[in-house]
Image 1 (cartoon, rainbow, N blue to C red):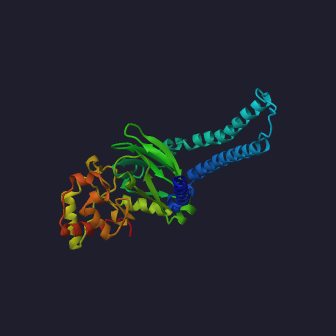
Image 2: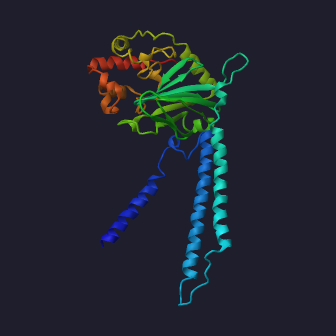
Image 3: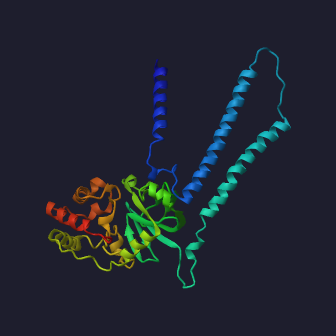
Length: 356
């Protein structure tokens, strides 16, 4: 009975694992590619899966045939095939051919996807045409710098669709890993070197995802590793250009005329601006880049990368950041705020917008 109970438990767990493996969202699934890189990697996954399943099926069939057809019925010793050159050639050549079928396209795609030479190419005016984004990973948030556009933003990566976007990846503290599942495989961000790669965001895939893809940290980095998310807005080229122009137009923090927002701005300038910038220029002092850039905070879809951007969640974050993201740096330098201060800061943060 005990063996039967264990077998039932194992069957239940296996069934649950099978069911759960099918769960997921289209914007967070490698099996629903929405970019050239992801599609290429998906095709390689299908090829390797077909080969593996094919090998398992053939071996299983051969095993069953041997078990039932050649089951011993008497004391007669069957014909011995040990040392058969024909069989040894067959079971040596077939795996080699299968490996070649898998290895050749894998190697070709690896070198193609690793080609980032376009990042350094310049046009006749001496300017770079390629869109480059410098990604800096931090505990537990992301900074995105557009060096050619002289823009810095955080937590929400904005990119054009149907165009290669090149990335320089680096970490400021510990090893992280940059991953947008539906767009392409992950790439590590290290503290001692810069990794480079490119991605392409399909307009059709962006439309299905509502122009918003989810990004993750794919390297265990601390207690809030699972909460180190970022979002990607994939926009048509004209809308992306408009966003760039709107960000570039912000030279100084916008002065507000609403009393509560003014109170929040004064509090922000007194306590927060030493770490958080509210202008997007990449000439921002390094001291103001130790925390997320908040220039367009009011337009972002999420707070801290994980909470829907609304008044309630902003107040929840400001009241106690540690309960939202354990181990974050803000909790160590952050004093308790009164309800009035939280209301004022929330109003000011929600007013930080660059697009009408």
